[in-house]
Amino acid sequence: MRVLFFVFFFAVIFPACNFSSGSLRIAHLTDIHVSPGSEAEANLIKAIDDINAVEPDFVVVTGDLTNTGSNAELMAAKKVLDRLNVPYYAIPGNHETNWSESAGLKFNELWGNDRFIFTTDDFLFVGFNTGPYMKMGDGHVKQEDLKWLMRVLNNLENKDKTLVSMAHYPLAEGLDNWNHVVDLLKEHDCRLALCGHGHRIKLLNFEGIPGVMGRSLSSPQFDAPGYTLLELRNDSALIYNKQPSEDVGDPIISLSLFSPDTIKTLPISSRPNYSVNSQYPGVEAVFELRDTASIFTGPCLVNDSLLVYGNSLGYVKGVRTSDKSILWERRYEGALFSTPVTNKKVVAFGNVQGEIIGLDAKNGREVWKVNVGTPVLAEGIVEDNALYIGGGQTAFYKIDISDGRVIWKFDEIDGLVQGKPVLAEDEVVFGVWDRHLYCLNRQSGALRWIWNNGNAVQLFSPGNVKPVIANGKVFIVAPDRFMTAIELKTGKEVWRTKKHQVRESMGSSLDGKQVYAKLMNDSIISMSSRASIPKTLWTIDAGIEYDHNPCPVVAKDSWVAAATKNGLVTVVSSNGEKVLWKFKAGNSSINKMVSDDQNTLWMTLMEGKIMRLKHPMYKSIETVH
Image (cartoon, rainbow, N blue to C red; front, side, top):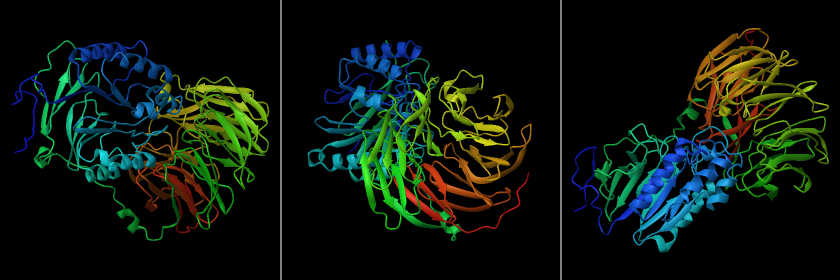
């Protein structure tokens, strides 16, 4: 008879520290959040010394090794982890993939890969990256990682072993394609899924797969730093809280790996629901292409017949829109994050190898390249044959898009340029992850002014927002949840408000009179660009639910469109009176939307989709001013 499960925090039937001679012991570290010289680093050293004394069979580290994913933090974490006397296996968490000065390259350099597989006599262990990737959003398992996982699990050599999966995110809501991962693991009879992210030891139900969340190094659940210790037997698992220099005590969780009673009373996540699409029959997907990899860039419409985008395997592709055929493609090392831009003849973008590249739009031939030294994630903007684009963490560039000649570069920045710049008659304005917003002279590249919000927190920077310029002002929203208006000519702050829960998603009306923002709490707002104080023109509850996708808002005369981290497009009237339509294009982040002259919206989704939505025509709606 199989061992049934129990979850408790006091007396249990298993004796403390009485490890079975045939069992497998695993030290589980997660959410250690190390930075050089920090208390977390000192606590990790104590935990590693304790693990070496306990002598488990191996150690797994399921993400959030650092605070910001910086190279210095990653190296500090590895230096301590390398003190281990037993093998260890590490995967990144959202703090490594959301914020990373190397765009994820440093993690792979230090640990060899962002996924792993290893076996023991009885068990098969697989670990994989769950993102998100260089922007706010839900977690996501890349399409190529799902294919890798499928190949690994179909390997006949692994068929007789008990499968244990490891990821940073729980395999539930919060990981946008959790259902695809769970389906694959269930198909191969996965018996246990370890995760982190929640900072506490917890038993979870991943549609019948027992999930165990490990504690963080410093957890609100416990009064001292520590780690999670697991004992795996043939048919059961014991999970302990282990604090350095203290006895392990009784297991916090004891469970059977085979009995369905183990987790049947625990809640499960709801699967993605597409029923909203039947409520708006006038909206139609007239183009859909699925890439074999994930997509982090937006679409670039070169002309009516050619679309260009980049994918997570480093391919930039030119697609004929009439039949979805690939006209050309080129590959670069590492994922592409920089949305291509064009002057109709040359397509320009950056890569994580630190290059800004121009390709012939007709055939994909490389016509020029500018080496900048650090990963380029930013989308540029093209006007009068000039490309304005952030060059990683090194500089901001103005480049002749025809031949790659650097017209000027501004190198007085100290952080990653990730967002798209915006142009005025004489100015170019852009944000940087160094806390600052910059305004340069378009002709010379000379600094006009520099602004910051007065807060020392780098992650509050306007680093991934496309500003709006209207009525002599620059408008931004940022992770500090403030909307700010700044005088274009002087950099003087006009007004600043936290009335609305903004983040990084904004846009403007075609006439520049309204500044739009998608909020984090269901709503879309319109602010007056003309007022000298914060003036809300309208607020509409659009039913978006909680969302922090930085996809810019798109607007035409009669409508305003916003996109979410779970693939939902919501379009409201430009006077804020009603929701016009919704369409759920997928269940992952919409990277960018582009409106063409035929009343259609082009978009890419992280799950590897390129879509074109045809929607009803609306007469011009009188807006509120």
